[in-house]
Structure formats: C-alpha cells, structure tokens
Image 1 (cartoon, rainbow, N blue to C red):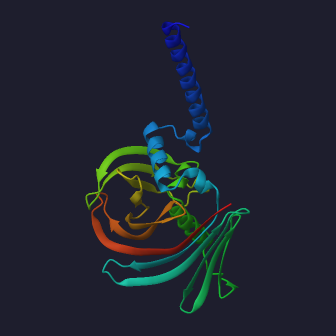
Image 2: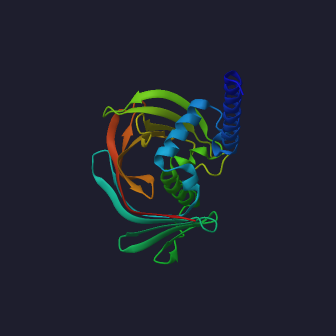
Length: 264
C-alpha cells in the first residue's frame, strides 16, 4: 500500500469512527428525559446543573431520602412566629410514600402521603380540622424543594432562559424562569413563577425567587453538603422582597441535617 493509499485509508477509518460516535451520542440524546426541553439554552443549563449536583440517572435510581429539617418563621418586625424540628422520610421503593413528623406543643404530628392519598394525624388521631388542599400543597412544596433541580424536567413547566445576573453578594448566576400551572398539571401545587439562580462557575442552585399570588419570596442556599455524590443544602434563608429583589424582611430560616440517600 502506498503512502497516499495509507493516508486515504486512515482518513476514511477516522471518518467512520467519528460518524459512529455521533450516531451513538444522538441516540443517547433522543433517549434522554431532557429531549422534551425544546430550548437549547435551557437544556444546556439543566445538563450542567444535573451533572454538578450528582447526576440525573443516579437521582432517578433513588429508593429513599431521609433528613431532618429545622425552620423558623418571622413576622415583618422580626418576631418569631414559630419554630419546628421535622423528620422527612420519602420512600420510592414501591410507589411513593412520604412521611413528615414533628412535635408541636407536646403533640406528635404526622403528615403522610401514600400513592396520592394524604392524611394528617395528631397523637395518632385524625386531624379533622386539616384542609385537604393545604395538606396537598404542604407535601408538594416539601418534596419539590428537595427534588430541585432534577424535577425541572417534570411535565408542564414553561421555561425561559433569562441570561446572566449578579446576586446581592456578588455571585454571578445564570437565570432560568419557570412558570407552573396547577389547573392543568396535578404535580404543580400553585400557579407561581420561579426564577432559579445557578452559580455561573459551579452550576449549583444558589437560590431562587418565587412570585406567589400575594407576595414574592427570595431564597438563598447559604451552605451545602455532599451525600453519596449529591449536593444538598445545609442552611438557607428566605426573605420577602419586591419585584426588584430588594429585601423587605427576613421571613424564614432553615437548617438541614442527617441526610440519608439510598439507591434501589
């Protein structure tokens, strides 16, 4: 074989390898849950944060998540309205079973959701005063926050990539706006608009702002921990803000601990 023949043979071989590689990547892309995200900038941003946070495939293989959660609520004058220590236990091994337990005024509270049926008991007695819609929203809100960012591929979310922003402490972030519509999608709790802030360097979720029906909340994840390769928040704060994200007052403080993540 002449030198020229060898050159063309090598070029042809490399071309075939490259085409096969592209076809494999394309096939994997078509199988990805991200395929339903039509906007390229949104898709790329989610891919980056999934990878940095622990991996979408690893997350979907979860059997259970358990953790402790402390939170305190404050009024506009800085007075503490309530403080609660909870234990959250989410089991996905057979359907979906959620338990949230806490003690309030020496009474044991248990909020449960099993295959969509939600109940609340106090000292093992049914809490007949509980509002079903409120209970549903409590469960959806708790599980939604824990599942961020992996649940941003859930059905029915309307996305917009809003570019780059700088938060109050100088952190540069990419901004992803998401609109939710519970009138159409049962997995949405309330008709809110969210702005998710992803660190431009690490692509962790450092915070978000939510436009509710009657106010805006600005939440910052202040510290993190790693458990089995996943990044979880340790501390976060929530402020009431105006549309320009100017802080009005501290609304809540959160502390998380004792994370347990078990795969199937």
